[in-house]
Length: 388
Image 1 (tube, rainbow, N blue to C red):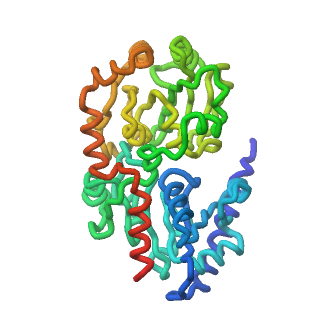
Image 2 (cartoon, helix red, strand yellow; image 1 turned 180 degrees about the vertical axis):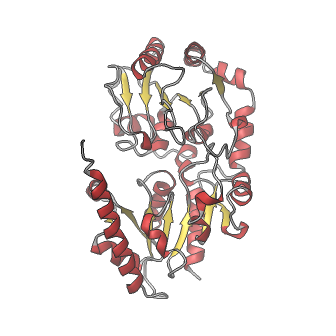
Image 3 (tube, rainbow, N blue to C red; image 1 turned 120 degrees about the horizontal axis):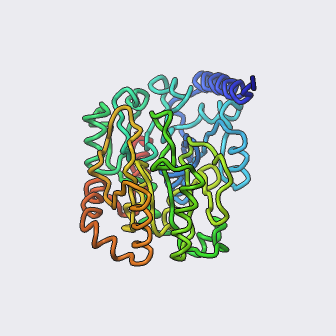
């Protein structure tokens, strides 16, 4: 039997992380003033809401952000890129957590959750996507103890209060920071294509296929309609090629790497190598997805979106239901290919088919906050708490 060597390493890192959390708790001195308050960002990667908040903090220069990670390779990658990073489980992480004023997370906290409510360290949640997936209060037990949760809209706030069990006073509407660059782009298209290494493609007109992972359905395939990965991709890539487009494939970060080599004209853009999801969305001319929350980010661009009519892999039902699928829903391979062909050949046909539904969903999901200023509102809430 093959031994999985990653598990002992993972548990050993957790144990070291836990010991440094305890040491930090012992070392903390509440009320100690700093010229630039230290703020810890914690999540899988410095991406999404955390990335935009980090950018805003760096630009403001009155706060000192550090990304805390359990991944030694990612720590080295960030440090090499000039980003302040700290490896969880190191002595430096104990010092950081002893001196920090706040933690902003977009996922769980691992052993760092022990400090919630047990120290002067303030905690804020920004989560990592507006969900189709059903959650309930049990899924957010740690976050219930946070100082605040920052959400996208009144609809989002209502969801957190009625379904996820949050105290209304702790849920604040800031908008979703990750959407800021979709509303106010920071760079031109060619510059971004070059940054992602996509400028040399035969066609820089891009179709993005981004399925969610298996979630609560262990036998779920990422590739729909009973097709194998290679067959599905060859058919879809062929349709893209015929209309002057390149197919990009972005699996969910929990889906692991692809099992087989993709066809020659298919480009994989995995999260591990391309964590800036919003930049990829901004480059994409058409999105194909199933139940991924990535659709709600893409919604802000007003571009053709095709939803695959496949079984949702959610044990707890929906947070936002199927009625929020704002684009074209297709139930088989041919219908999907027909839609891709039509929208690439005549993009205006998408608007004619879906009507005003995307704008209606946009208004419901984001309210009046998709204005490119969400990260600034997050910093306003953070500064308010730090000043107390």
